[in-house]
View 1 (cartoon, rainbow, N blue to C red):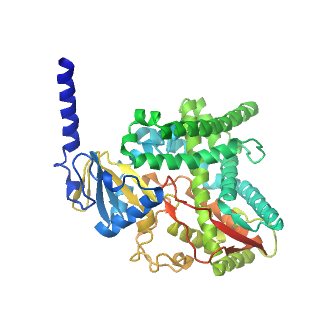
View 2: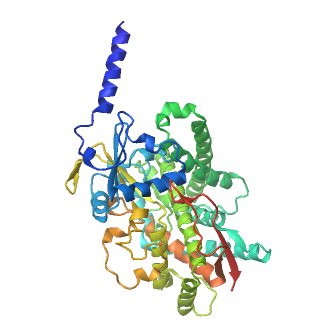
Amino acid sequence: MLWQIALAILVCYVLWKVLKTEENELNRVPGPPKWPIIGSALSFLGLSQSEMFDKLLELRLKYGNRFVIKVLNRYILHVYNVEDIETVLTHSRNIKKNKPYMFIEPWLGTGLLISTGAKWNKRRKILTPTFHFDILQCFMEVFEEQSRNLVKELKKQVSEGSDVVDVSPLISDFTLYTICETAMGVRLDSDKTEAKLKYKDAVLEIGKLVMERLVTIWLHNDFIFSLHPLGKKFAKCLENVHSFADSVIKERSMSYESRGEDFNEKANSRRRALLDLLLEARIRNEIDLEGIREEVNTFMFEGHDTTATALTFGLMLLADHPDVQESIFDECKAILGDSDRSPSGSELNEMKYLDAVIKEMLRLYPSVPFIGREIVEDFMLGDTKVAKGNEVIVHIFYMQQREDLYPEPKAFKPERFLNGEKRHPFSYVPFSAGPRNCIGQRFAKMEMKSVISEIIRNFKLEPTQKGARPTLIADLVLRTTEPIYVKFVKR
């Protein structure tokens, strides 16, 4: 009898928590119909990743640049206005990531991407020196070597008659090799095992599984998810990515210990990889082995997958615009002459047109199309109170393609970033902004400049179908439903 009373009380409490909506000001913000208990969940049930991507644009067109989706007792405010985006991204305390990020916590732990509060601040301080300008200059040798290796592989494929290339796998290899050697201090391209392939496949699969879980409400519960086939597949993917990252940590740790270097000496400080900084911090008891694993997993993912995505879309755009390619080629020739050597860091900085090209690539196809926050401190968004516990989604992809911000928004026009056009500073945020901006954005830009300049100096790019654009999907990073093919013609 007592357990029945207790169960009834529990059910009543749960229903009360779920149905208690009258105090939330976000009820006044437009959005899809909110049904009792389930909220707006039916609007998204069974959608594919590409349909989900299109749905978010459809809702923006229907309800404007600020709308709310309610799922059970979660209120999720979606914003597209630059003023709203500025308010959200610059808030000093509301830096906690929202619920979907928790679905990848078993993979990344609470590393720099997911952590918040004091832990995030501490980790950011430990890791920031890795991306200091002087240290980035020391990575130029790796950028140069890996860019040349990529071009060598492309030349080989072209000479064998395979001039039409699915660019994503090759670019993904390039960025994975680069992040391993620069940030982790480990050479990977000599690895002949299946570990690399399993790692890359697992990263792609994890994104799909997370998005499928997100739109399947009953799988939000960790226990139910663990019993479901999707959860079992997720666990298998975790084995592969963790095994790969652990091997990287083990290799660098052995090298670190065998060298016995004093990384506090100024002579060595310029040669430290991110993993060296973490190993040094462990000696000072600022981080433990699990913390190192969290950050290695985080940077292995963020440092290779986001840049690979940007480069893949970038090559697609360049293939469609021979005039832009020739302008890049002319700029390289003006700086480097007829030499076939790779540019130095200072020479990359002189490539202002290439810099504008990369900015325009990231405007059209930001690697991270939206950013989520869980609110930990009440704040005002205009005249609307956004209370603690609510969530906010910042839509970078659609905001950067608004016609009122960028005339001819879908056109690829690098000159937008050369002619001094005045625009709101938060109308362009492919690397986020505010306290939680991307720590590795200068690294990514230098890497992209290095490899694009090397490719354009050796090839002319052509599309397989002029003006064709792939179907985009909602994922951890921007992805497509089909491969992106580019034709490479030797200069």
